[in-house]
Length: 119
Image 1 (cartoon, rainbow, N blue to C red):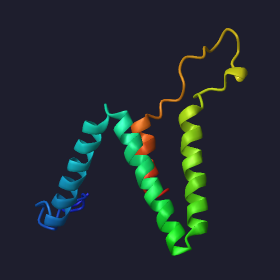
Image 2 (cartoon, rainbow, N blue to C red):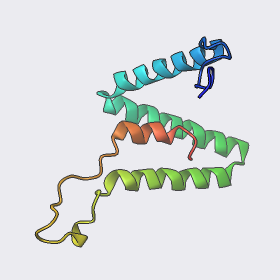
Image 3 (cartoon, one colour):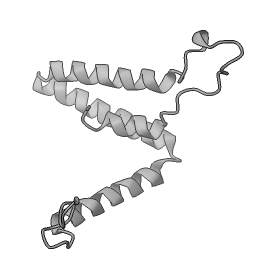
Image 4 (cartoon, rainbow, N blue to C red):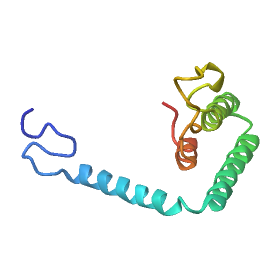
């Protein structure tokens, strides 16, 4: 790789202002996510409030129904992935594998994905 090919660097090898800005914004955002991890009731309150505001907006504007339907399917998919185990317990052999724990999609990750664009 030649000089300046990495992300956030200008041609001369110094970090670009824009790259530094977005790196800092990402660090601040991650810091807020880390600080909010212990407060599950507050996160659920914010999640439900933002969802209610979005639904009121859709009702008032009388539009965005297809987008809302697709977003609802995406949120249902996240919720099912959060609840489902890593391995189907009925498919396990008696001696080979043990059912250990459910899928470890953290609740914080589910709530984070609820407010980002689906891939």
